[in-house]
Amino acid sequence: MLLPTSLALISAAMFTGAAFYVSVGEQPSRLKLDDRNALLQWQPAYRRGYAMQGPLAAIAFVLGGVAWWDVGGLQGNGGWQWLAGALVMLANWPYTLVVMAPLNNRLLAMTESDAGQATTDMIRRWGRLHAIRTVLGVIGTFFFFWASYR
Image (cartoon, helix red, strand yellow):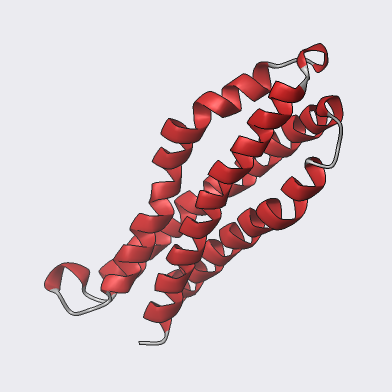
């Protein structure tokens, strides 16, 4: 039981750390660039971030579910925090696919010559939307941390 619980907490914390870095480090720095360079920085950074954060959210969900099951989830023996954390981590997927994907796709489809003030406005909006992913990560990690110390 120790391995899935530890790995659930670690993967959620890694997701949260990466999301936090994007929100407080990368995004404010990106917004100091001109429109063209902001777009040129955002596009590869988004692709790399998606390739890392998507799997981390999925792994945290699966391992949180395993941890919940291991502590007797269906029998009602406690450990509901594992399930809550797992579901919060899973919420990153539909949020990203439904709420953020249209904006992501528009930004990814832009070329260097398309960049303008509207591009930077979209990147600014993307940052506000991404901050919600950071909050979801913090909440999921909190539930896993709480469950670990019950």
